[in-house]
Amino acid sequence: MLQSVGMEAVFNLEVSTVYQLAFDDIAVKTAMLKHFAHQEVYRFVFNYRADYEGADALVLAAQNEIFILTGRMVEFDFIENKSLLLPVESEAETEDETMDFGML
Image (tube, rainbow, N blue to C red; front, side, top):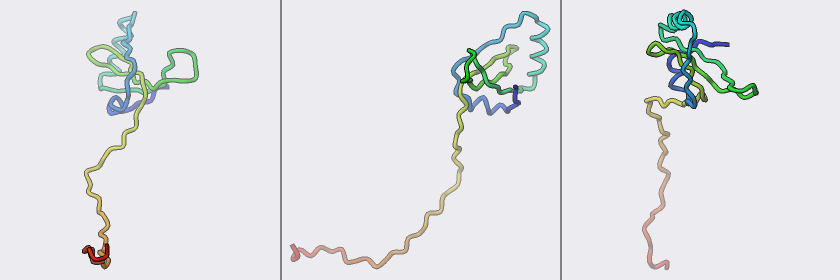
């Protein structure tokens, strides 16, 4: 099942394989390219073999060709440009840290 995602999904994919789709019928390719004319990106689960473990995949068009990118989606923790407020420690009474050499 295809799920429409934004272009930022391409940046979150750790790409392992790129497939370029080949079409026998030029009319099918033209129809697909019209569908991807507005830079749509679709996500789906890709299985190269009939097994249970699928890879994340994106299908997109670029330069009059249609590509499938497979790999693993990576979640990034974005850092914000905020300053953290550190708690101010009150200075407790400090002992006199001078060394008394007579105590040695």
